[in-house]
Image (cartoon, rainbow, N blue to C red; front, side):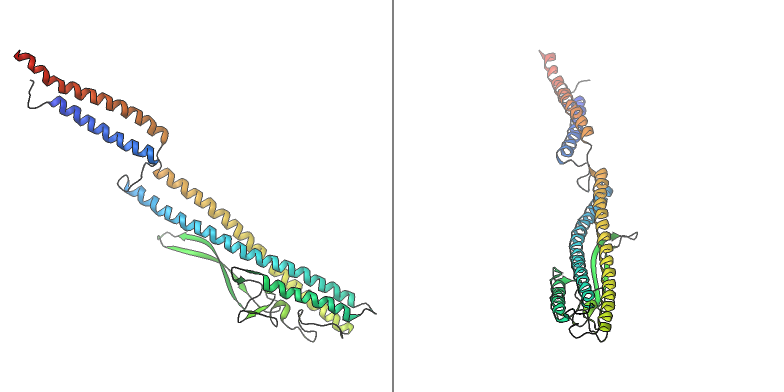
Length: 301
């Protein structure tokens, strides 16, 4: 039966066209944005995971930046310690030269005095962003190393610590007092007996026995400085490894989020072509269904 009040064929064709248009709009949005899940309404679970992990990834990016700053601090301290070792080695050589009979100890002391001032200059200059790890009071320096989300979904920032010690066998060249270098503490500033500290000793009137004692003290200082340099080198290596890990982890998170929310462009391209064809057919079908009502007029001619 054909009715001019109700056109079931046209209604069915219109419903099909609406469905096709809806799918076409969705596919076009995916193609234009590149996302399969762009809003919470697309997939609430995946959207929530992706949003959280993107937030964590930004925190990891900040950790990577902090590691860069930390690496610069450690490298600055290591460079200073390495340079100081070279200078103390020169002082050691001068002391050995002073043991020879007939050597003018006053002249040797002039050279040692210049080397001692160079040690102070190294310690004062080894500062990065206001932090000095080779001239400082007893305390702890920290480097941000990671951002952690544990099993209970709690977040925290982890640090790598480096404890400073201003004793004669510690890991700083000089101590620090009131923001200024304290030349009476630290590996080079702590007095080790009658010969004084590495920084303050003057061999002009030293006997052969005192020079030998000074050599022993210099050797002890070199041992402490070498140990401190090794610790800084190990810390620098750890920071480099952690930075590599953070970058790799960030890439993995990006990849994981992409698997959840990114659109498959090959699939979406195929779907877009199919939907465009379906849209044309649905329009044609609706046109045919609408024209059927016009055919009724021929019955009354």
